[in-house]
Image (cartoon, one colour):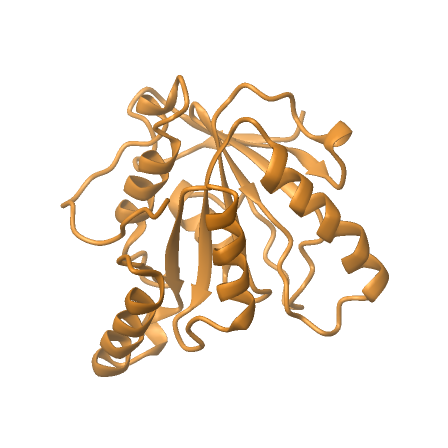
Amino acid sequence: MGHSHDGGRFLSRKAARAEFLGAALKPAQMPPEGTPEVAFAGRSNVGKSSLINTITGIKIAHISAVPGKTRTINFYAVGKLRLVDLPGYGYAAVPHAMRRLWQPAVEEYLAHRKTLRGVLLVVDARRGLQDEEHDLLAWLIHHGLPHAVVLTKTDKLKAGALAKARQEVAAGIAAEPVIFSARTGSGREIVWKVIRQLAQGGPEAEEAGEVDGDDDGGSVSE
């Protein structure tokens, strides 16, 4: 089912592999529960697919030139956990009928998926937290889902602007966001650290991803 690749040195040292498991718009189409899952949520065009590709070391998630093209819940097996790419929100060009189709599926997944351990909210550092992000964070808190924020496209900001963006987001979520750039690869070790923290409730999370580097950056909120 799907195709698989070697996952690179940022995964488990036991030759972890990354594999596309399939796409779903309703629970019956989702892979069976059992393996711990961490979901990626965010506005269209924030770079979720690029983030997944960078941390796995392969181009497993499709990157479209047109925002809003991720219109299904996409499941990837990586080592002994799953990464789940949720459809992007906030892009006006996506047909209303399609949005009405995927929004209930996303809410059903987030609210009732027993193996979902946490959510990474992916935010464009140049935009910061908008109303949609605040609404999603409130929803995650209400449902008791652990979460963390990853700031992407940070290489497009100068140091002063990035420091300000980081400070504003940290104040908004009462936690430290992860600073990440798909272009430079900066922050990918910290993203894996946070993924493992989120997945710790899972029975096989300990060997899910291997982190090299220091412990600075990123914190999980509950």
